[in-house]
Length: 383
Image (tube, rainbow, N blue to C red; front, side, top):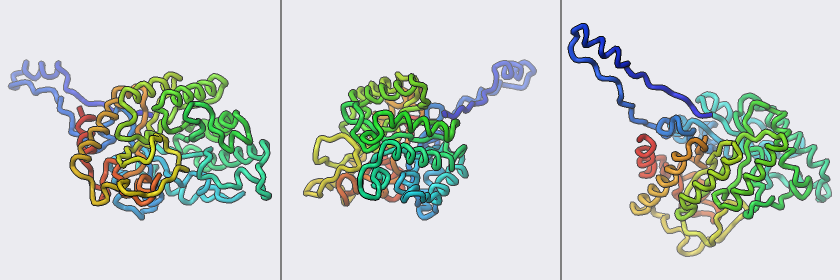
């Protein structure tokens, strides 16, 4: 997946010949490397750098964000348009228009295109798991529907979407399988079936397992066991996505480094797939990113509504730098780093887990301006 570039340097023999024929001082080899002007160029040869995009980007409704994505990133992930509730909202009904826009945008700009996500317990309509009487579907019924959905969606974009988050968030915090409707109805082998169907639908697309809180040792070990088991049973898995919804104090760099090593031990690359840093106060010590988690606003939980002070800009920058130092040190294991969003103004953390807060989790501010964290990361990656 990683790009390969080269620099042309004048050979020493040419310089020696130049002096031998009396043409004056030999020219010096071209050793200066141009200063990178984008995240994708600064990270070149290490890993791809991407952003999750909403339909407003490819549709042209968010023109400034579109230009920012084109300028800064070389891979994109859809925020919602390929999730079940959007692309397959009713039985037998598929809406590919937003997805087609998304993929066409990536193609037009030469990007690595990720499809998110095929099998997930959230943002999946209730009818997927229940019959018309409101009773749970049978194993055979849900397996048939899974096969229809994956084959149809992946088949529609065959050869155009380069990688798929096949199964999303199937693990509990202790590394065991989550008690999701997929597991309750189909059984533990629903993950194997999903990868099997996706591989048949597009053998050339990369297939990933994706989850949050994999920086925690039990969950990282559980993900490694899961993926290794799939591989050993003959199923193709091309990478593991650690979502990277981080806090200012979690995970510690050493913990993150250890988790990447654990995940990569299965012999597949690691992707940081949904990176952001939540610097707002938390209501609890929960470190997860379960979209079902909700909380009420109370005093002190939205401290930066009027703007982020310089001290916090610096703290956020320091945090991003220490995380990226881990990614760079492990660039032999990390293939991609994708931010979950483009600018602070459209981040999901403005409404999760508490609606209406003012969040600052990304590298570009609410007006699209590069923040101190952006400039400092550019400096660190350019060295």
